[in-house]
Length: 405
Image 1 (cartoon, rainbow, N blue to C red):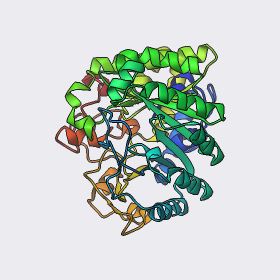
Image 2 (cartoon, rainbow, N blue to C red; image 1 turned 180 degrees about the vertical axis):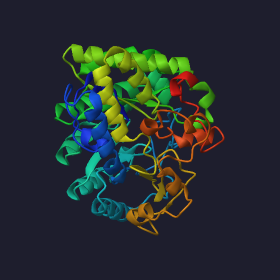
Image 3 (cartoon, one colour; image 1 turned 90 degrees about the vertical axis):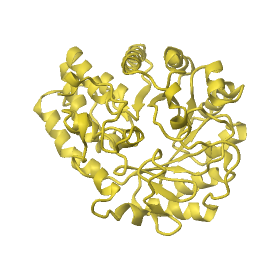
Image 4 (cartoon, helix red, strand yellow; image 1 turned 135 degrees about the vertical axis):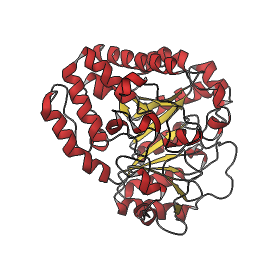
């Protein structure tokens, strides 16, 4: 994740400790100079040693059929989900292992009958629990229950405004239902935010999404770059942005984030799944605010770039463990046979997990010679593999040859 509001606007966020390995200073604190860069170098090692955030795709069932769904979810569950007992065992193991956050995703996690009970179990075990949902199933009783079990955060996915979202997600009325779900959560004091994937369908409505964030007083929004997985891989030719479109979208996100902060509505804004956004933002800051650019560089060095297989892992509905949620073709093991903690700490020499944890990774092409490698870490290997070479270039990197040398 690239914290646009944190790095460009200098606003400290509650999740800075997770992202940078320590609570980050507010704007102006330790900004610029060798001290900022030096502190980043010291912080980078413990960040990489952190236990992973775990995405738990607790079901493949979903009441929608999104064009870009990385898990190709739709309809009822496929019958191979972890049982409630198995899922609670997983959560207990994650808590004992020291996992800081478990993100309940799907499919649509609320399509699973016992998801709220599992979230409650995670919270009781000491885990921070996040719900990633399409929002359409958050009725009044569900919102009340989410508040009662103290879910830490609810991230609601949209893909554009009303008509675009409903076409993209395959259900008329999905947008209105999601907005109702957001309002129900907010009325109960829950932290709730938006999630949107940047595609050819949605990029024209970024301004409208920011208008929505401001109008609904939404405190957090994450903009995801497309990853070619699931149905997003099947139909990728119609979804991709050009590099020029991506740059324009990132600039718009930066500009609108800054405008929100100037207006006294400092939403937390992040981009996700394209670590080229970090260097792009740094180069812009270097032109506009060199002191803040030095602080941003220190924080990005501390974050360490792509965390797949390091500080990010995934458990599928059937217990398979993956380096991240996009790599279902790469299983590290199954929690029905060995605990997640054992799978994650067993790193045979030469294995994918071993290679992902190397610094630097065994990268070829532009990635291997890029001057920004320490803050990007080779971007998403799932996208590179989909393009033909797991250690080759990530085709979503929009930096020019001149910008990486």
